[in-house]
Image (cartoon, rainbow, N blue to C red; front, side, top):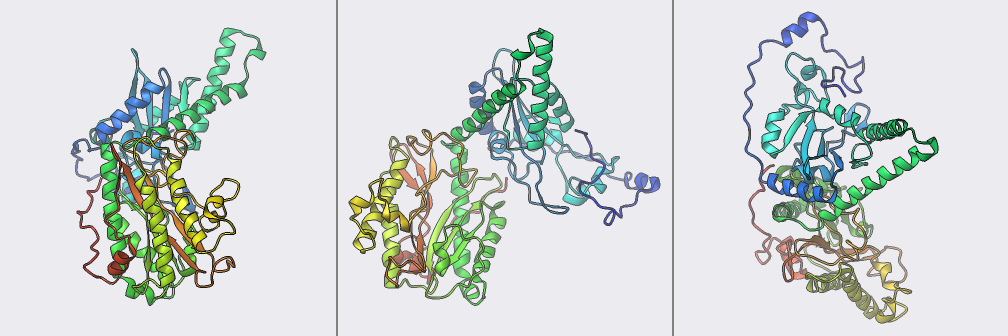
Amino acid sequence: MAEQTDIAPRATSNRSTTPGSDTFKRYIGSGWAERTDILPPSREEAPFAADRRARLSTAYPGKRLVIPAGRLKQRSNDTDYPFRANTAFTYLTGWGSDSEPGSALVLEPAEGGGHEASLYFRERAGRDSDEFYANPEIGEFWIGPRPSLAQVASDLALETQGIAGLDTVVASSDENTLVLRDADPELTLLLDIAIEQAAIQQQDEAALPAIAYSPAAEEADNVSGSESLEQKLSEMRLVKDEYEIGQMRLAIAATARGFDDIIADLPRITSHERGERLVEGVFNGRARADGNAVGYDTIAASGPHACILHWTRNDGPVVPGDLILVDAGVELDSYYTADITRTLPVGGRFSDEQRMIYEAVREAADAAFAIVRPGIRFREIHATAMGVIARKTAEWGLLPVTAEEAIEPENQQHRRYMVHGTSHHLGLDVHDCAKARREMYLDGVLEAGMVFTIEPGLYFQPDDLTVPESFRGIGVRIEDDILVTATAAENLSAAIPRTADDVEAWVAGSDQAQPPVVETPPRM
């Protein structure tokens, strides 16, 4: 791993027109004002990230832990996707949208116990190097100013090292080194090789019979430990700290403004043949203005598209008289994201069937929310919502059995109209904590500080002959973001209109349903 990169990654001779003469290099490397680094105060998240590192440390005494940020991912030819650091890396460092590709956090076992944390990243090049003008991936002429080691150390309240120092970490790794494997496959491979070589050397020095050592077994042990690390970090994120909850509130507030923007632009949206694309664009504009980006691809599903659970093509019209299901969330610069769904009557009023279906979904959501409190199991939320869905679909004559019979595990006919789950954890990832064990997640007990969605729905496919013709092509989902409190729960997105009456008033621009008024979240 070289400290500087002189050749631009994926550069081609067809596009390389930067002068290469010695005269040019001397000239462009001179005449620059002296840099004076202003050291920022440590960011708000820094003490919370330090506490998370301390808690992780106690679970892995004597182990070196390597948490990479990940690298740029190629989109096509010589263009990359916007960089998004690995979730665990951000969780443990506090470095979000301003993080540097290729970075890695290393927790080194300390004498006397615990770990010492160091953040390795590629510091900006000096003006005496050609990196800053000739490298389009990391050069400042191309992507703008990059931070110094001292600036990042001050910002994150964390020791920093140049990226070249990571070579020493790799070279000295052995069976006591664990890495978050999926974050940076290239670094993981280097560590795997070093760990295997260390084991072979130890075998040779011990002069044990060759049969006593198996590289495959050694690698399997290390991979198992690394999987445990990934699992541990997912489970740590199940309960949010004070900083995380504050970020969730800001992300939800920004998302509410995004929904306002969509409603305000409905006349233009309905006049375009691909109005769904305009919905997506309007919301993405809010996400970029008030945060980092969207937390996931926006679903703007109008008419029968609302029956497609993850409709992200968003290329259809938005027609008055139809419903449009918008599932969207703003991701802040800290990477915390909201995840909210509202189903809106495009023309301003629900039809009788639309209203009946909408209010049934809301009843299921409200019933699920009503039971949330510390001590219940996560799966009870889904079961409660499904009880309402079964009852409603049975009342409408859609089921071949009673509601009570339908909810039996061997039946489940009502699930034809809602095949997805009711809740998932939410935070740095839209589907957060995904690697947690089942007994900690689906079968886990709720604790104060958990944040998750409640999102029941009903979807009647356009060609479903088991439902009345007037139901076909109607899809409804209502999704809110829920915080478990010390005694019950708080619906963090409750201020976004959700009853049929309030939604109608909202779309019509009535004062009866005012969306939340909040300040723009600070940039991180």
